[in-house]
Image (cartoon, rainbow, N blue to C red):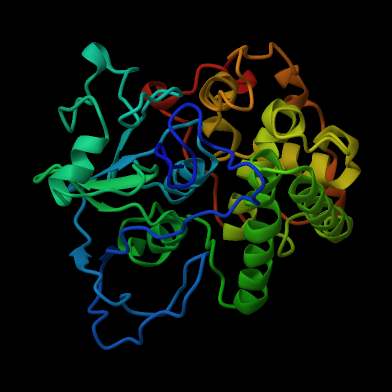
Length: 367
């Protein structure tokens, strides 16, 4: 999620009057890899990442090395939330350290204001922007999370969020915990990427297309597109416990981070108000099923989510008032998705309980 006017202005320039929202998906495309990818073909243009390809033109390969990299991922951001989930599911906590910026950034960038003295204890700086400038002194694009920082140089390696989680699954496999789930099963992978692509264009990005619409016409078109996709998901999940069947995959991670923000933020703040999530029988049961699955809900901080959206998008919410509701305890009510069969982790096991230092505060799982 950016903190400059590239896709979301810094406190006041998120909406361009008269225009439809277009997300800039140009990121630092370096990758951390465990193999020689030089002989692999260049990946096709994609907004959701790719598996089985080499480097993009001009990108650099960095070596997989436990303890070398620091994942900076604000809990407020849905794109960053994906990396927190996959890191947990695969058991990479001891391999890749984590930095957690607070929910409200200043005009420069995300800040580590939740840490003592406002300084990340691993990187030693207050602004994430410093790490981008350590890599590129003239960096003039959005300062985005998630970002992976090389600890020795304090320089950003990549902020290519669609690719980061895919590489966690494929390039860091040697360091996965025993019995970690396979989030990218080869069987059905092509279909999964088709679903991931539709989820990104119509749902993950669709809520922003509604919220940042610059005209009534653009908003209504975005609204219609979003709920066509939501109805499609509702129908798909009527007969499947998870998007691809009986076990969790990368597709579920990518949908979950939008669903968990839907009622607290998108329904009101972004005007996606045809239905609340709680009014979709299958989507709501599915979302609770994931929330109650270790690795998903235990990465979520509802207060930080609301503080970020309502406090940062001041052209949409000029008063900066953060709503009190909705009641988050409903996320712990029975979901009854077991009737569809399957197990979230298949033949694998859930991750260990979340560590005290990484427990989100505003979360009914810990209250």
